[in-house]
Length: 355
Ligand SMILES: Nc1ncnc2c1ncn2[C@@H]1O[C@H](COP(=O)(O)OP(=O)(O)OP(=O)(O)O)[C@@H](O)[C@H]1O
Ligand SMILES: O=P(O)(O)OC[C@H]1O[C@](O)(CO)[C@@H](O)[C@@H]1O
Ligand SMILES: [Mg+2]
Image 1: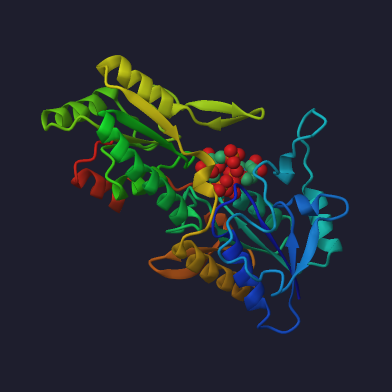
Image 2 (image 1 turned 90 degrees about the horizontal axis):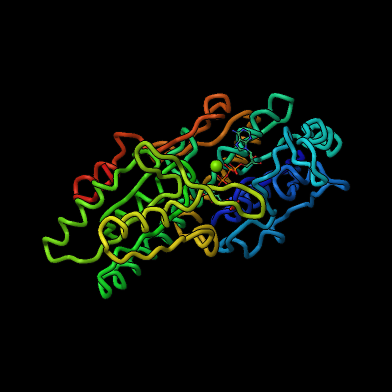
């Protein structure tokens, strides 16, 4: 059996633990070859193909290494591939299918978030045998309780909040921390609760400045002249819109932290400062949770390949790994639900959610 493996979308801590587990588990079966595909599906569109054989030696020592040894991209949709020379994007999906056939692959393990899995579903419809593994710091993939990478990102954000608490207190400032997560507030919510943020603003709940100011006033009356405000990059004010910034010609969510800080200063005269945590949330050593979860996902992925259960993506549900049909996941996004356990917890301890 010849099996491909790739990582797609933004990188995250824990990807290498999945790759390592797949390769090590594959070695327990006879006649299984693992082929790493470079940079998501790009390795199947390049000439020559960007593929290399993986064995236990190749994956030795990568368990605690951040990033992905296979490389990745979040700008490589084969169905509408940007033309480096300019002009309209082109559909290169048939090139991927041709490579898959020419390489004699029996299946591909696709490790990715919602974007990558959406592409994988379309490729599966064209005849590729695919098993999906959910990863992303954003934790916004439908049907799974936790994606690989989320735990580490929360850990990093929680540490940042804890550090902002002390400097906020010394200077009696409102410190604003902008965290990642695209249009889902999981990172902001979990890290904010974990490190005692006073205000958490999520994309799921359009915020009002009046509500935030009321919270700061209440704190002032209790003799607390500092606060920490965690803002998810996709958050926006009631009746307003999301904020974007352009990096290397690409429009990404970002900028809401500065907007909130400035508006609060204008309205209250409280001194504010902004920290944009950025890609620090995606780099470095994965947490033990992501390393263990990644290993479990990797083993399950290889088992599904051996059982020929293609067209499925793994999901963690109530502490168990199960497989779900691609069609039940693709195109679905998981924001923080209104009845989320952590949303209730935040409200229960009096954190202002901007309402
Ligand atoms: N709904 C979609 N359907 C098909 N392709 C998509 C969709 N959304 C994004 N893409 C493409 O998927 C690729 C990866 O998407 P994205 O950047 O969203 O990463 P991801 O796999 O969701 O992981 P992460 O969110 O952690 O970065 C990009 O090439 C993007 O153009
Ligand atoms: O690496 P890039 O292209 O700047 O993308 C950043 C985006 O990717 C993520 O880190 C993961 O999806 C988001 O949280 C963030 O909005
Ligand atoms: Mg995504």
